[in-house]
Image (cartoon, rainbow, N blue to C red; front, side, top):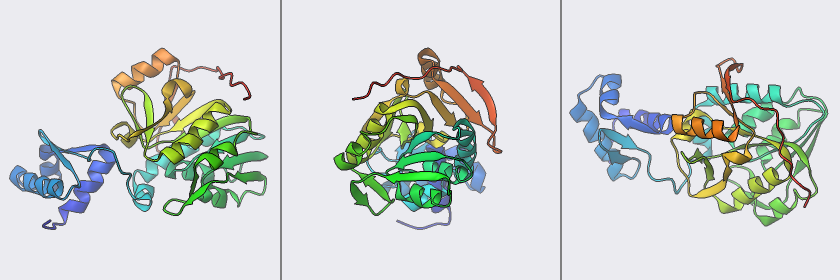
Length: 274
């Protein structure tokens, strides 16, 4: 693929926003639309983008972005989301955090929390929270995934059976317009599913890019989520679905304070011990 200085930037925009347009990129880079069309064609031929009318999108979601790249994507939004989430987690709580860069950001915000019990299948989260001397950390068992420090599989899921969490806080790779939470690895997904089953309440951490991405494996439905925290308003169809399900939406500002609150509620799910 011919390399230009624009290609990495075009890919970064596509990952952050889900798609790019020819006109928008031409204006951004100060070049002709013909030049941008050539760039998008080159990236499509290399399998990095999929051409659509007027622009390009990320390829169909069958493979996740490299973990170190995901750490850099929308990092300010993830930090703001994490600050808002931390304000919703009381002291003296038992919580679950799954694999992901958003839950890592939340772990950093919880270092000052008192008397937390945290179960996680994310080794990075455990290492971050080790700085909190008032936090009891339990790592699940399971198969170790070196690319992101995750522990996955049936053994990891089974290790959650003896817990009854106050809140399960999860991230995901994408949220479909029908309200399905999606990810890439079935062996990872079963752990998040089990955590939701073993929790009285649930929070989804999802920056705005997650609403333009897809992935092949279902985690759960937003009907199983009490609160969604994001940095931008959700797409209209999804926002309406949340309203019908009485799922709260918290939109953060860059300082991490809620900007507005939609469809508030105080209910907790009854999740019988199994």
